[in-house]
Length: 247
Image (cartoon, rainbow, N blue to C red; front, top):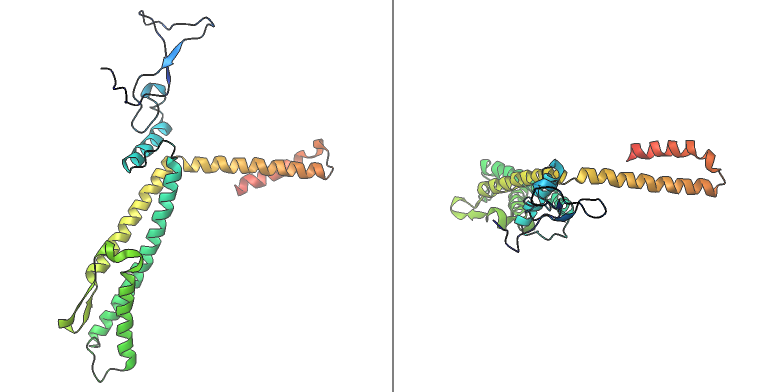
């Protein structure tokens, strides 16, 4: 069945064949080719016949397809760079939620201790320090659940005047704990996809380029110092080994 005119086509080229299914050769003796009419693999630029079965091609195509599903289907967007930004963003959120969760747990424990000591209901026997400690714990929880819009993500906290002003924290803390756990899973998912997109390979290539630039600079420095070209070998080899270890 012919493809719709707007359907993406494979970027590869296919050999031209005659009616006998023989490859047609041009005047220069080379096989004639034409644009491939097959659709590319999902998220990819080539079909199965032109490299779409290769593991690295399939991995990059899967990442590109997922980005397209997120509305990031611009062909000019580098999937690896986008995923690297997403990993950084998600990791920062995990750190923030983890800190807030620890602070919320601590503040809730302080309120629990105050409740068990019957300090939540103000009495004449309470010291100023005891009243202040309860208020600080409540203020801490209000601050935590409103930091960075967290209240919009985990639900609002509330007070219960009938129980002597007990500050209800369980629902919000559970929500924050789930938010932190979900973000950790999301961050790990992004990181796995970033590896699949070839970020590790790119970092190696970048390190290799940096080594070559450094060696060129060392060679120029030796030349400026008057060291003959034939005598620069040992110094360059030692420098190359050191730079590769650092990289």
